[in-house]
Length: 497
Image (cartoon, rainbow, N blue to C red; front, top):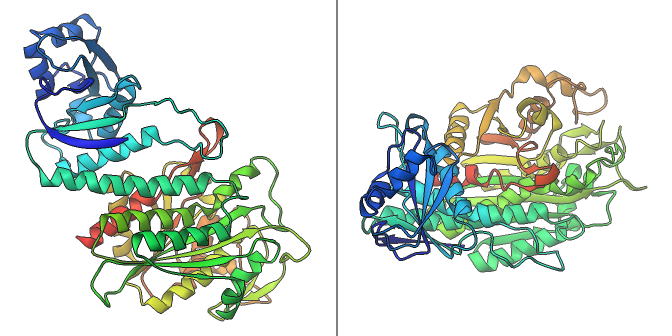
């Protein structure tokens, strides 16, 4: 889908359909008023008769109104104006695009005037334009590349025309940023949705190489021998049961000043997780292809940032492997030495994400980063705590945590801060090694996992995002969500500004 801008009145735009907003109390937005005036009160008459409504979620298609160039007018219910915020804006834009339907090739959208109460802080036109693009792309996203028969029928308009009152550089920038962000989210979704027999560590390494050439990223991909040479005994331990070779993938985007400290994004890339010897239950195990969604978010964010050409330096580090059971797999009770020199007793091989991340976090030290954020589908405990709404945010750094929370709000990609405190570290005590890889069953599992990672992130400012509940959906809507690419991209946008 293409999103473009055009300076034109809603009554005069020559498109298949023009969408205008109405609030729940019947208040018309300026474009709706203009159409109602041109059509001699036809829009208000439809509202009065009940044929159209301003209720949240309502859409009504009116045809061939006098004085209106477009043959269709879509009336979009905006709901209560006092409650109209950015989430309501996204919902209204989504409803407009879906309500127009596939028969509409060009949809003109008078959405920049959809605002809430004058008392509330309103987003700028740049942010709204970005939202229109990402929402439109979300509506048309499909995962069908591995289907032998693809449904080529359109599900939404091919072009969305965002109506403006004149040339606006902010709107144009918002559109460009929206396209870049949507491309990043789409990439993260696509990678998450690919099956484990396709999206292997080798596949991710080859993708990084292609992205490096396309986006001018510095890329280095380490194979098993290179990973072993780095001393990543913890990472290697997870790979022992699989025939698929592991990869440590390092991608560098250099958009900032030469020598400026980069932000490092570290992604968990378990391309399939059986649990290893601590085997998972069989039900819904197919969803463990999503255990690399942290890695997918690193790929997606780097694409978004590179396409936006943000003036920042970013390093993406992905530890990628499978966690499989076999005669060579690591066993509960085995002890391994991490890249940091700390030894780890593996009490549960299904707590493998922290074992690959800890070595990747140690590797990140060499870049002398301004901040490090790791992203992982790490614990079922985080799903129990926060469900599918908020990603879990952990950081001992209040300033960095506040920065990420602000980015989550700006991106509408919710996160909630949970503690990472020394009082929880006792759970990781081992009689035989420097630490165990799990704590007491049923006791603050997501927090203890973050505390484990904190032991390897003392050399820099660090935060951890547990996305186990937000990276994908199950059931009939099964599929990757692309989160937290929006959060991470907004975080880096803030750093760039």
